[in-house]
Structures are given as structure tokens and as C-alpha cells.
Length: 87
Image (cartoon, rainbow, N blue to C red):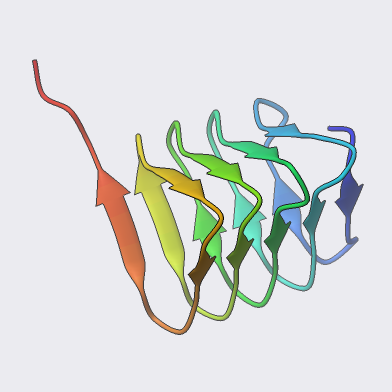
């Protein structure tokens, strides 16, 4: 974990937060999530699985799950992004 994590936020030890990114308020980051390039996660947002977030804002009750990749986006309110590949 290299970026800012608020005391009220939850970040798994397996997650990667780069120095330019932040997790604030009551946001939760679980699994092997990667936050990069000035990404911000806050509110009660949930990120889990193997999701990668690049230069994006995820907030409110939004969820980014599975193998999703979010780049240069804003995901908010009760939106859910969930991508899984089945071989």
C-alpha cells in the first residue's frame, strides 16, 4: 500500500494502492485490486476480486468486482461493474 488510506477505510493486504491513489471514508478494497494513476475510492464504494482501476473515481455505493478494468472513468451511486472471464 503506497497511497493514502483513511483510518475509516478498509484495504486488504493483498491490494495494491500506488502512491498517487487514495481510499477514503468507508470505502472497502478487497482481494487483489490494483489502484493506479490518481484513482480515488470513497463513500461506501466496494472494490474486490482482481479489478484494476486506472485514473478513475469510484464513490458512493458503487461496486467494481471480478476482473473488471476501469480506466479514466467515474463510477458512482449504486452502479456495479462486474466482469468475469470463464474459460
